[in-house]
Amino acid sequence: MSKLRGLVGLRAFSAGTLFVLGLSFAPAAAAQSSAPEASPERTASPTGAEGPPRHGSAFVDPLGFALFGPRLGVEAGGGHFSGALHARWFNAGLLSHTLFGKGDNTLAFSYGVGLRGRYYLSEGLEGLHLGVLAEYLHSRTEDPPALVATTSSYVVPYAEVGYRFAFDRMYADGSLGLGYALRMSGKVENLPGGSSANQYVASDESSVYGTASLDIGVFF
Image (tube, rainbow, N blue to C red):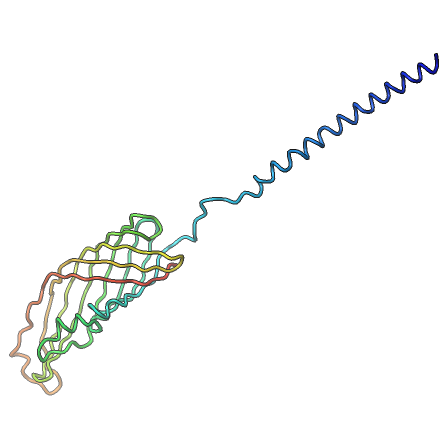
C-alpha cells in the first residue's frame, strides 16, 4: 500500500514538474521564434532618401566667347524659384565684335550686368525652367583713323526658356532668350590727339535681341 502511494506521488510529482517546465519553456521558445521576424524591421533601410538641399549655385557661361561675351554669376533660391546676378565681359564675344566693330570701328572694353528670375517646373533647381531677365550693357567703340570713340548704354529685357541637367553637385544648363536691346544714351568723344568729335552723332542701334547660353555651375 505504501509502495502504491509512493508510486502515485512520484507520478504526480513528475507530471507537475513537466507542466512547470513546459510553462517556463513555452515563452522562451516563443521569444526565440519571434526574434528572426523582428530583425528585418530593424535592419530595413529607408527608401526615398534625398540628396543634400540646394540653396543656389555659382556658374560661368563659356558659350559667351562665341556670342555676346562670357558671363560669371551667382544664383540663390530653392524649390521652384531662384534669382541670379551676373556680370558679362561684352567685348570678349565674337558676335559682339561682328556687330559693333564695323568698318574702322573696334570694340573696346565693354561690359554688362544683369538680374534674372526663374521658375523651375521641378523642385531642386533643375529640369525645365522659364525666366525673365534685365541687363544693363555699356559699350565703347573706337575709330582710330578719326580719333573718336563712341560710348553707348543699353537696357535689355528678355525672356528665356531652358533646361538644366543636374549631376549631384554640378550641372549644365542650356537656355535660349529673346528680347529687345533699348539704347538709352550715346556719346561721341575725342581720342587723344583728336578734335572732331562734335562732327559725329551716336547712331540709335536699338534692335530685337536674341541670345543663347550654356552655364556650367556648382550647387551650394
